[in-house]
Length: 316
Image (cartoon, rainbow, N blue to C red):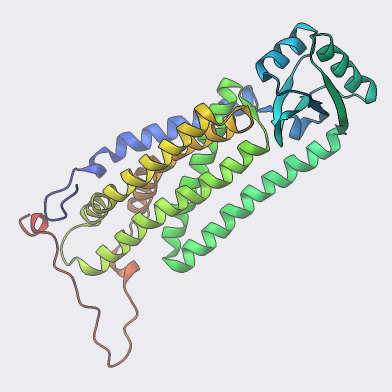
């Protein structure tokens, strides 16, 4: 699909426009998070969980409608283990009386069910989860910085971690703008986005490093542009097949993983973009050169054999 001997599309010619777009997205996301805040789910805010066992598999939409008509607010209804077991999660704090009120409300609609159990999640547990989730994200990013810095070079480490911050902030910004529920499944999606985006960035960075060492002519701009061109086929195939699966999960996976799939869809699109433009732009800003990529030459050893550059670059 992408012939290395043909002059590539000028990806880096769009670097300034991409830089402006990235800055705008990050600033708008930070403003949205600061002004509107995240719509935290009950995993973080606390609430009451009621587990119900039906004689026959109920319609979850009908259960939601019954609860809504009876005055219940901010609740989640989903299957739990089987299609006859339903978990109702309420934002309000309560005890056995609240659970029994849920049972009475649903039984009044003609359903046959029994209460399996109820559990109250306190706000202290939610606060602990918020602290641990934030620390987990920061730790993941710190480990990535150390790993990439050791594998490549410190400039590559910085250029790989900043796009990850970019991806996470933009996804959080989208959730803040639309006030979609942010719960533990979305947090899991953010960690998956970090891993996916990092993998994509490392593929591009690895090719950039190889080309800096092997191509004897061409500026840093041209070498980075060629590297992006050479990895674009792999990037499109990987992102495309991943998105197909995620859209299937989003439309057919049910409410339990709906926001998880949605966060991943946004993250894959933003992560693919950032691995091409944000990371590559940062390498140009940091002025990565052949000297940065040079291998230490052992005494008496021959240097690494250089690779002939693509034909289009020789003609320049």
